[in-house]
Amino acid sequence: MPALVLLGAQWGDEGKGKATDLLGGSVDYVVRYQGGNNAGHTVVVGDQKYALHLLPSGILSPGCTPVIGNGVVVDPSVLFSELSGLNERGVDTSKLLISGNAHIITPYNVTVDKVTERFLGKRKIGTTGRGIGPTYADKINRMGIRVQDLYDESILTQKVEAALDVKNQMLTKFYNRRAIATDQVVGELLGYAEKLRPYVADTVLVLNQALEQDKVVLFEGGQGTLLDIDHGTYPFVTSSNPTAGGACTGAGVGPTKISRVIGILKAYTTRVGAGPFPTELFDEDGEALRRIGGERGVTTGRDRRCGWFDAVIARYATRVNGLTDFFLTKLDVLTGWEQIPVCVAYEIDGKRVEELPYSQTDFHHAKPVYEMLPGWSEDITGAKSFSDLPKNAQAYVKALEEMSGAPISAIGVGPGRDETIQINSFL
Image (cartoon, rainbow, N blue to C red; front, side, top):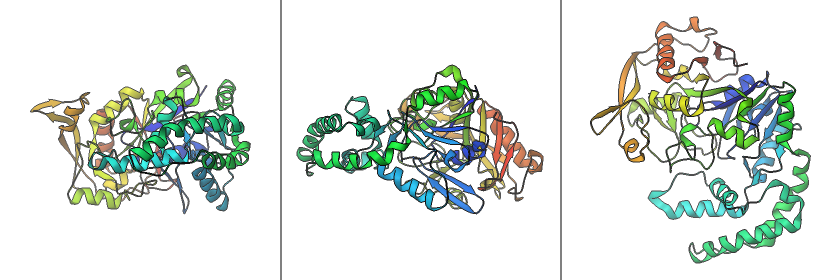
């Protein structure tokens, strides 16, 4: 049962799309198991660049079945816009499967997300404003709308009405916004029902049967470990579980069926949105990383905050996910630095700390302790094997591997599909 989980080992934006695409030709199913269109994956195929937000990256691999699992929240308008864009570029999207148990992002979820962030002002979390958090909140509060509800108008109407009984009180009396009409929401959602119908399936059954038949299934996480609702830098996190355990609940497969867990690491560190970031740079080095790395959010369009590699975070990701491998991306971005700092520990209240502090306060005050590694000036984008890399680049990779606690099995040396060094097979 070759089931692999592939996830971000930092704050997201590590290049998961490239890694998923690399494996796409070898796997039978690629499954998104959490998040929504607040995630963004960029995949470069030849001279074509694809920006995916909700769809699994495997949709670009012929022969692979892309799946949106029960743990994902789905905005139908975004889904069909993304499908339409791919169809226009000649991509076959007909094999997509969507869990009937996935929750729908309704228009009122988007409204609540936007007005709440606006109200928080300087205390805002930095959400994408796409209704993700409120939809997960409705799910937990047992008042969410699932894909399957679109096929029973009576149930759908009752659920929307119950949700708006609460939300309209908040919108009108607290936020001074106009109330949202039940029939307007129901009508909009019902308008998607027949378009969705060809894709809706019992994906839990499909995936478990596939594993029993020795099919290769890849579970693709959105965001990253440090944005996990339970294990991330709370409250500056997403509303779901991008960590490996989320693959089991978000796709409906047991943990004993997972064979490999691959963490994606950027050769430096970035994050989008608010929250602590010990190695963040506010100087010309940070600006250079942003410019050379093209560090702008695929979904948000916001500039990413940039900093040096943080080995403390990498070790933490190894631990909470049970990582078996790392895929190191964007090594080429570091070409040109004489010396490259790597954060090996933190200083908190004058004490050296080598593991991620569980206290939010301690992490907020953590100062990076750096070790300087020699850089390289040679262009590495044409490297096809580890031995092709300059000696200092090899030493940098080996140092990161030792500090992070799991083998680096692949290295991205450029944005292209073929600009990857494979050291160990993931299958």
